[in-house]
Image 1 (cartoon, helix red, strand yellow):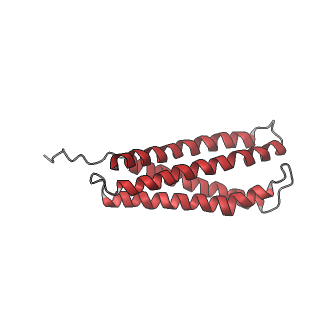
Image 2 (cartoon, rainbow, N blue to C red):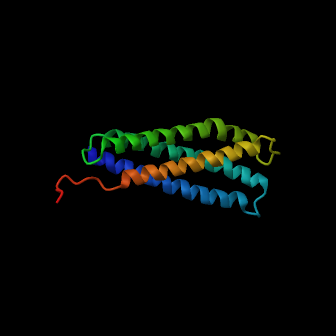
Image 3 (tube, rainbow, N blue to C red):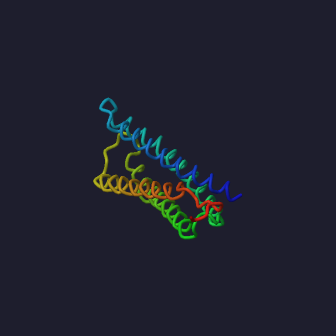
Length: 158
């Protein structure tokens, strides 16, 4: 069960880094593509972001479950496993904050698609960029920490 937990958290955190990076790259391309008008851009945002958050939450919940299991692995220090667990909780918390307090108001500002954006749209959009950048950065750190080699019990110091 412990080795399954390690595989689970390694997979989930690494998959979330890759998915988030791909989403950001394609999302930026979609909204900056000159041939799309504001109606299409707004529709793409409303179409893609719910998928983004769903993938995030599934992979982060899987990461939390993996965190619970790796705490019992002797080859991973208690400090390292606790740090990874705290990072995953922070990442999940940031994702929930972003969805409920930033994305949801942003989506209502672009509904119906093509409607003029209110003055506060820009500040919400900036906040979304910053919180998502921090989220991805913390996920990269957590993924690196969890993917570092474990201490091998069979090795002896020479």
